[in-house]
Length: 384
Ligand code: GLA
Image 1 (cartoon, rainbow, N blue to C red):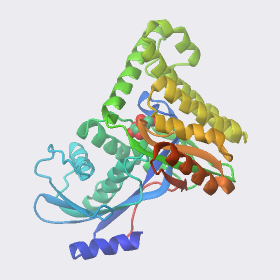
Image 2: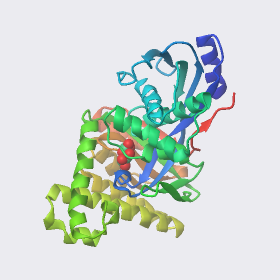
Image 3: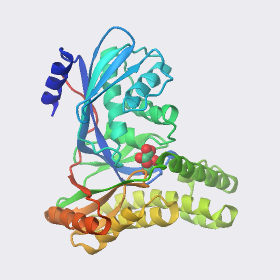
Image 4: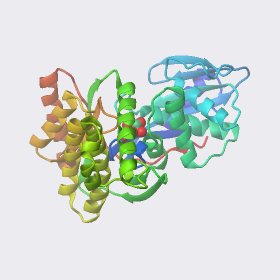
């Protein structure tokens, strides 16, 4: 993909790029909505990437060519507060985050190419922010540590686009390791360990192709509920700053101190942190059946407690329980639509994906996209 991308850039703009980078999408394996509660997540980068290349030019107006959609966009760096309505917002937002950190970026011609599915819950936006940040950083001599690059991408979402997301997406895109899942701590903002899937198993991604249109506001409301529950817990448990500090027992004791909704949101988050840590132990002990089962438990908690599932996602997970070869399935990412991930025996994966998509199509009339996923490496510069 890279050679072809660089040649396309050169023929589109008439000269070669001077900096380029690529960054992958990600899958949240376990640990749903735990990142902004300073909790734990098991995630991985995928083999699908977004590539970004640029070359400097005069003036203040940047051009961005998207080879996947065939669209050409422009945006003006003279007014960084003006948010574009198209995909160039992620690039311009990154320039703004860098400006806030004291780095001056001048105009450039840029292009993107991507194999990360859009609006699915695989973090195509984090992949774009990260690839753009890395390439801009190379061209303009900006050096930041990896966690700070992740914060820049998160800053684009939080400050520029109004989505109060955590660090998971950018962090996984940057810290992902080929063939490994990463266990991350979002209090200390570090990778605690890596864990591979046992040989003979793979992850099948099934995209419901349905996205709820209030996603951003629903997401922010969930975050506010978690913070309200944490405030109650802080009153009851000395030193508990976020839901990450609470055990299931402590939460159960505090049930009558908060609204039922806040309790169920908190139960999901505390349960997810527990499932992540237990899941790692199961993987280490070779208990793949137990690990798979925790994916189902995670999904049911999303459905019943966090209410970030949809009938389509529920149906895909229900299918996972009846079609042979699958050990566990759950929604992955923010929720309210997007993808489910399925832990499947590798030899059964193709047949499994076919059977799920056939059943899904006959029930919903929608053709689901299926991907037998490979775990890829984190973001990197492309040597030109
Ligand atoms: C989205 C957000 C992440 C994380 C997940 C849910 O992907 O961008 O920060 O909160 O949802 O775990």
